[in-house]
Image (cartoon, rainbow, N blue to C red; front, side, top):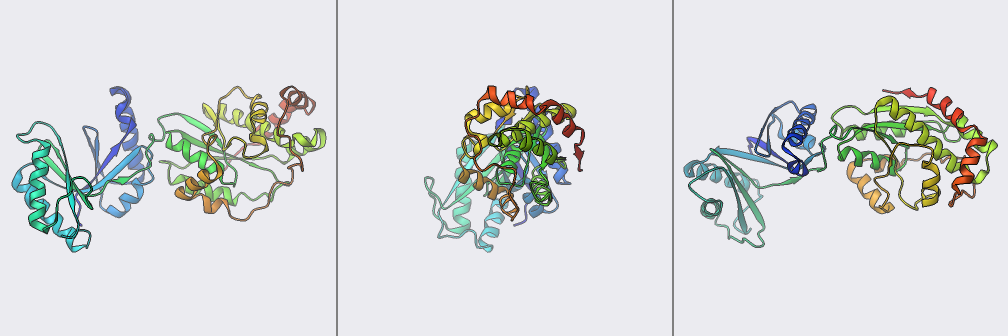
Length: 382
């Protein structure tokens, strides 16, 4: 099929106030241009792309947040002769490609924007008669095998048969910056993706727990490469050496509290980085009750040390749901690559931390000073 353009649609952007809507539209167009070098126009809630390579364009659009759906289309003037001629060619191409024939029922879905001498229903009926003559296919408006879409906009008419689902959400860069704690596991990359989908600019923070882990950041770098596919610009990435802080916790605090103290330190360090980068929130991959540090008492105890909001977009999802998202976005297969676990984890980690006791222990290990040391070692790996 020789298409003329791709029609791009957005969703919740359209319910914003006119001023906010224009800003979001402009950001979405800018994000698309960062992925595609092509002519782009916008008109009455639709974005029109004129790419040179349609396969490359569709692959890029599938990973741009804020896009609800898109359709490769052909265009013609809004007159019955032009529409009939263009639609005949369109149907012939579909038949030649084996996508449509007389054994498949069809329906025409019409939409009209502007003032015309015909209604949407009349245009759909006309187009239906053209398709019947061209392919001898039966009409079924209730449960068709195939749908044709005819969208009339002023003096232009667009014909297409696919509405390809996009990611949805909001354009990256419309909701401010967040610092996301990203490990080599399954959950945190999904959390980072969810924040990209909600329009946030993501700054990645990785804690290297060597010598309690192998110390390699290869998996994390591969995960970031995959997440970069969903971002209009390369994600900023920080790595911090966390082994000395963990050693302090293991040697000077009750063993059961190691994981609680570890997570407390991560949040506090992330807060320091967020202030440096102008980010407004910390994000992690917590799922309620999944591991010891993610019980409600432990969530309270670990987050008490920071005044900045900590968002957990996966908090109500179970492991299977998180894994499914990971597979869909391409991070799952990277996350399950072999890697050693953290040897700092105690045999019996605390699952019901007492906040008062945790605060006392934090004071005993000189928490604030230890965290300052770690923050000073933050390295921007970009």
